[in-house]
Amino acid sequence: MKGFVRNPFRRQLTPPFLEALWALTGAASQNWWKDLLSCTFTDLTGRPQPLFLAVRRNYLSFYAEGQAVCEVRWNAAARQPYARIHHKFVIRDAVGQDHLTLLGRSVTNRAGQEVAAYEDTGTLRSWIEQAQTYAALTNPLEAAEKKGVAAVIARNPNVIDVEMGLPRNAPEAAGARRIDIVALEAHGDAIRLAFYEAKSFPNGDLRRQAGDAEVLAQLEHYRAWLHSAGRAEEVIRAMREACRLHEAFAQMRAGGRGRPGLLDDLVRRAGQPDAPLVLDHGIRLIVMGSAPRLESWPKHEAKLRQAGLDGARLVWMKDLQITAERQVADPSADLSLPSSTDGSQPAR
Image 1: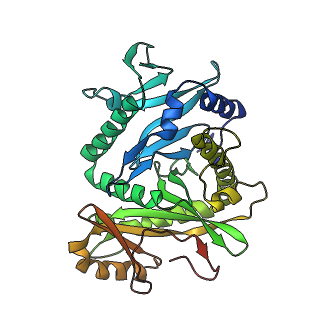
Image 2: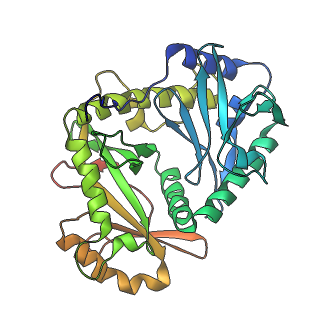
């Protein structure tokens, strides 16, 4: 279509935005930004974990069990950061779709009217709990998938992004395409970006009696996007910058500049200007389901493999405990994504 301009894929924050976040980090009094960095939620295994921080194009997303609790954005005119929150997380009986703004101790609506006060981490935790409840009620299947994804990423410090949105390559291209997990792997002398799609076992996209399962078309869309002109280079540049920022946020979570924040060594190395990042153009599949139904999985897995999908991995949940099993070729019982590969075969 004439006039269509393809949006670049980017991960970045402007220098003034980042400096303002450093200023909030170093403030003498507690504030909503420091609360976001320190607040935890309880995942489905009963383990506390911090909110997952994802770098976007000049904003940040904070996730609890795959649900975006809030975004942190930059008001360039006022030169200050603010949080953007879905109004249903703050006002329980709210209707429709709208967002509120948190600045200082005040939560305001679009008209600038104060609708709630922000007090401390207790206020934030109430929003997190409401976000978790909202996700479970609006789309139970998707919520179950995201709960599993949250449990996986919390146990894999080499995960650097979730819900990776893919800008359209053409005006007629399908929108709202998101890759569930982006992780790093040691790959010979390089560091490889690996991509994962997660599906809950009951999801009908995993199986079809006749023809290919719908998930194959989804994975092919992701592969085609990564192979399209210029996208690989954009993703590599963007993820290198995201890793650099993750190191800054690790220091912020530790309390300030110069402090050694908890950060996976692969992430630290990947954020260096000359980091040898490469792309894995294949998409790995994580399948999550309940253990009593596992006997029906092999035939569906066989169809996926016959259609060209390899590297499938099965994760199931039982009694709020997660166990995991790679397929017969490599049985194990953990939630670890590969952090190292020999460079000769796709990671399994």
